[in-house]
Image 1 (cartoon, rainbow, N blue to C red):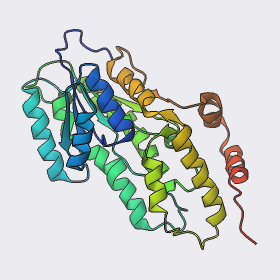
Image 2 (image 1 turned 180 degrees about the vertical axis):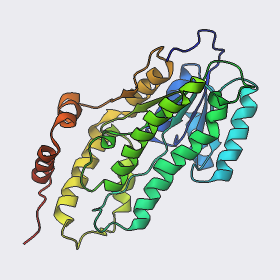
Image 3 (image 1 turned 120 degrees about the vertical axis):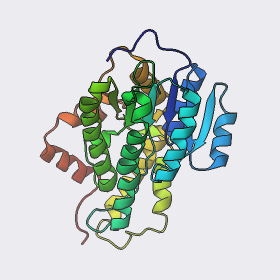
Image 4 (image 1 turned 90 degrees about the vertical axis):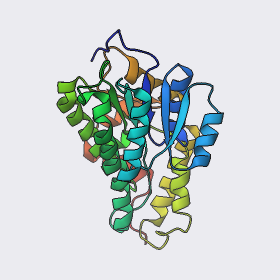
Length: 294
């Protein structure tokens, strides 16, 4: 969807989940390119650290996407800075990930994923759509929504059922938003990274530090899966590479509907995404030793 060449500068974007990882890299990168960036964090100390690491117009903003009052306050802050201009971009990045076999994972864990990754994302989107373009009193070209999904939004791995379920939901929501918000000229784009050097998997490991599934029949394959995921978190793409893809999604005159920044893309995305599901079942079963212990 072409952007209006008369767009005023600086363009303004809100990035959620900007304390670390992809969100922090995106907020820093865009601010250094001249964007005015509102970077959402949940702790003031994280905001201070983010601000100190940027030379651009980066404005940390306290925001919890699961709390309506927090979102309302954030909208007011951003609206005041915009005046009558429109918000150029909303990057929905806030998310959580916890490992566990779906058959025995506590429902509270599953619900927590949806509270942040799905309902939080939709709550933020609904709150900022008026600033992006649905409010006729605002001027300037309509903005764009960039939703951070995952390879897991298309390929469901074992032990990440809750996480991948939310990312599948976000993929569908992104397509629906794009097809509905076209009446305002607002675009919606998915960015689905593969392995990225980000603390999200360290946090997932910390959640499993007490080994809640150690006595289960999945203990051995889950341990192997953790090793693979943590290795990906240390050897994957730098978050700055994903930030550049997000920049493209925000700035390209004719953006794709979905971007897939994935390391070793042929073997980690292009081929697996086209394989029959039963073939993938066998690959996962062999790779993680998926069998009942003797």
